[in-house]
Amino acid sequence: MTQAETMGSRARREFVSQLPCMACGRRGCANAHVLPKLVSGGGIGRKGHYTTIAPLCVAPVTVVIGGRRQTFAGCHQLFDEHRNIFDRLHPEFDPDIASAWTERAWQAFVASGGAMEATL
Image 1 (cartoon, one colour):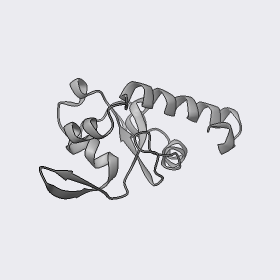
Image 2 (spheres, helix red, strand yellow):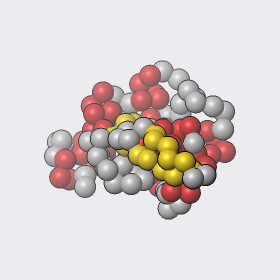
Image 3 (tube, one colour):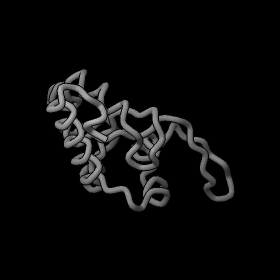
Image 4 (cartoon, rainbow, N blue to C red):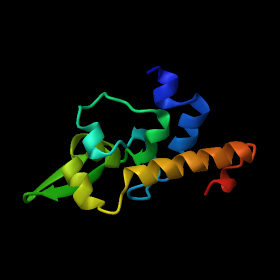
């Protein structure tokens, strides 16, 4: 796939980065490919179509695992590299719903002529 197919347009990438994290609600997000676990099991670096993207935060988050405090680079890193931890912290997160919501928000933004208020 081309970068345009996997990441979408620059305008879309910037739009998604302004949305709140679909897992925890914090701001400061990256465009995260949120493929379901069975699909994404092929390893980091495999990208789906841009319609499988949702905003996931990149702000540091600290969690206690086995009695040890560990800090990660937000929900995006947890989703990509520590999916079992992410799933325990955010059991309500559904990759299909998150990416579909993101695409609908983008389409509403485009249809409104770029009014961010139309998407939230």
